[in-house]
Amino acid sequence: MVLKVRPKVQALPGCPMSKCMGLLGGLWTPELLWALSNGPRRFSELRRDCPYISAKVLTSRLRDLEQRGVLTRAVMPTSPPTVEYGLTALGEDLLPAIRSIVEVGSRLLLKDGPPATD
Image (cartoon, rainbow, N blue to C red; front, side):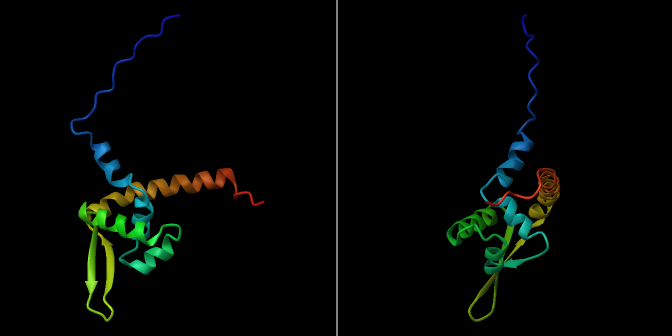
């Protein structure tokens, strides 16, 4: 039996999905966006919200997302200086995708049941 060759899927110019996934696909990016979805957070609050990320990696991800225009960084005039991170308009635009991922993940957790403990 000979299989028919299916027509190639026409790629969109500039591939918008690849562009968006380039922003979301970074390590810890979805978790950080989710942590910032309810408003600005300080570095220490983000560390609490994402306990498995090291301070070094968190700093690196925050800098990268700020450079890409997803986050804002505001230095507060306190002693010692405090820094707050918040979402830009682009970051806010990414939240519906993050919320959809969280909803699917929640359904998968319910389907699979609680994790087994040994």
